[in-house]
Image (cartoon, rainbow, N blue to C red):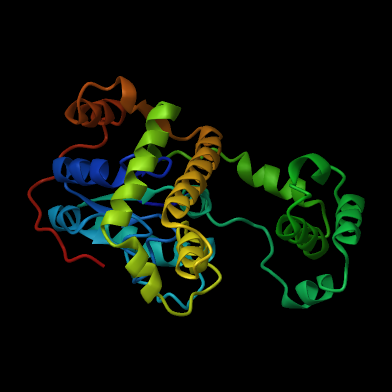
Length: 314
């Protein structure tokens, strides 16, 4: 379970929901500092493609864990946890309020629930899996965990391999392990920013155009070698297809918009299962100031801190 400082608050939600701007405004009101929980904004050199907070937003309040990992390095929930927890504890120790902001579900869950008890990846097993057909791996998995037929996307080889790997290493069905971990309900202060689906999609489409105007094509063109984690950022594959002459600019924009909408849909589904967060529907909120006051009503433990000098960002 989570053992973070009690003052920690989470601002989460789907991509393009306005988390960064909202968190910066909240931080100004309550004496907070922002801690990134977006898997791709951790990377240096991908400011536009990952929609990092603007320079103006970062000047307003201290921001931590943005652009700190080289593009060639991989990252996962365990590494993120080891990076984020000391930062959060330091912010709280200085009398400030840690505000964790992002939409990467596994990274957020590493903080709210603690690290998953699932075994780490096994290079030996994964090498062995290369000699099995997709059908054989599915059969192996279902023999060890029949429930996987409904809990694992059997059409995704990566998901099948990971589920089978857990079964073999843990010597028990992976579905049971995942269920017991997911059933934990930590006591955390958290807000999900929610929008009407059509409004959110319109925000996504417009943000993609804004990213293009800001120099997305040039940024991706300048990227060198990327780690398996970094290369998954939406927009990189699509722009590289355009740079290779295989896709028009218009189709590239449409592809990024579509991929982002699909990602937002998955995020919405994820956050609906996280019962430890309160939801604020921004469609029904008259002003941003009202939304901020609503947070303070939901969490009376959050009070503007005494005047503290902001620290330098990490």
